[in-house]
Image (cartoon, rainbow over all chains, first blue to last red; front, side, top):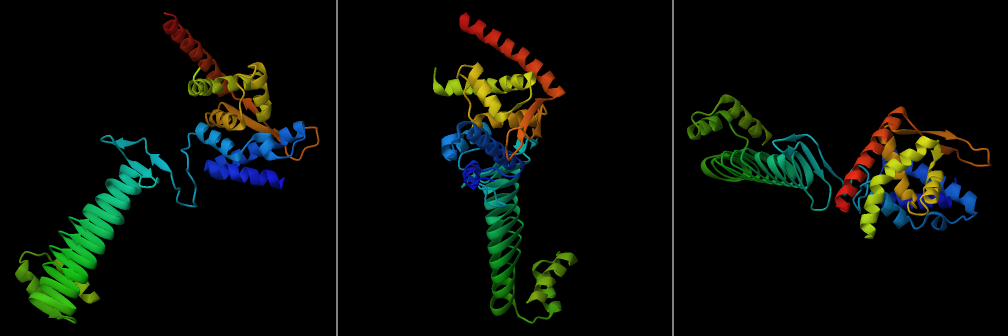
Length: 240
Length: 112
């Protein structure tokens, strides 16, 4: 193998931004073209034989319909965009947008900004969202998580249940600082407040707690609470 | 002619032309580039970045396939020859009919 040709081809392929079978094909075909032209012209410089790598790569990108600046960084394909042909109510089933600050909108959406039923991204907005900042109707998981159902994150805010460093909820919060009707954590503020450092509320318990006493307090606040939910709360108490 | 329009028109028709050339005889990539340049008197002068994506599309459609032959001359790598498939022969017939129809209708509008 001619090393100069290989370096030249590497530069072209890197600028095209392809991988797998297509990359192999392009490498083989460019090498063959270089060899053919070298035999005919006697010229050995790849730049003289085929032209500047930037120009060759640009031509390949245009004719392969690859967007400029698309690069492959290992597993994550920076600049890659995919929209599934399958749509539900006119919304793509899957939309992946790897462009910087690209917005992905789909039932399953993946991107810097992802909006969908199941959304995953830097900023994720949806029914169930996972991301740096996640906003979910049902659930959110992320550095910052806000939802109507369950939020888990550094900062977790929800109507139902929040779990996180700073957890704020209407029903149950568990975290370093927890504020909710039932608050469990280091520093707590709630009607039922179970703490190990400092707590304020109507029914205050310092850990370790008597689970039965806590259950009685919770039943005073939520008389119709189910046993499964109580068991779920008890699991958090056992973590304290 | 506007350069952009010129390029777009050429790109659109290039796949039919390349398929037609390969249907005449099996050919390797650089040979196609040279032949295109020669018979079109430079009008279809193509570079690798234009021709190979066309060949990839034809191959992906199952219209052409390739095989490798080590030429008689002293070489270190074999040549990749493209040949048309049965599916490709049918597709070429359809494409030529479509092109003639397209050409006829377009001329009819432009000449009116």
